[in-house]
Length: 293
Image 1 (cartoon, one colour):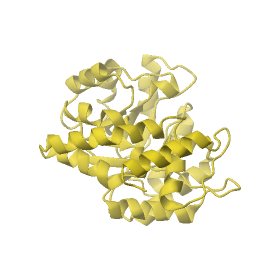
Image 2 (spheres, helix red, strand yellow):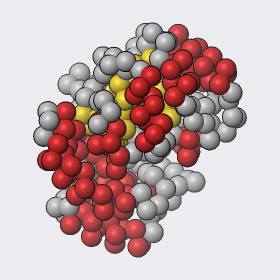
Image 3 (cartoon, one colour):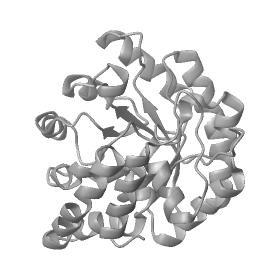
Image 4 (tube, one colour):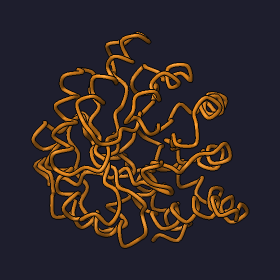
């Protein structure tokens, strides 16, 4: 059974000028997403700059979101690592602070084989009792979860779905063919939500949802309810804004967009840095066009 249907928000991690996590703004954003109708929140994913958080901060961010949300919608903790033992430790800690499920990205850089990637996920999943969502984003990790591998990983009892960000529609269709209805397919690409839903998907783990949670959730629920034309209208209307929030590496533009929407100063940790002035102009224009500013 899907952890959620609709739009899960891949939440940004607000930071102070000195690079420390701004927990007050983090909780404020989590509350806003609940009020706006988000269907889940993903803390410490790619968009949450997990790679520049130390382990203590990482778990503290997940815990803060869990506490603020207080069971109203699922909170999913990003706990992937290219070190299996580290992934186990993060996953166990996330479960301990109350995460409802985990999002576990493939190992990156060290080029796991099919055999070793299966062992990696088996070890992490065996270390916890909460559900696990696979995360395949080869453009960042260099490791693609092929349909064949997903077909093996779905046999792990607490693997309940995948965030599929390959951008390969043929691959998504083949994964859909190999899994059953209890295995949730989530789009990892905001501009491919409807194609994934059309083959039985459950929703999206969304970047644009950071600034348009209500609209993105409604799009998915419209589609699932059979109101396909309304869903299509939203998908197409969002496309220029989606292009803008990915005109630089994620999460630089989306974090800037949240700053524009909320009046926040935007800060990052190196190696990420401030968005270019042209990006800010483009974001401002597209957010106005979409009715957010």
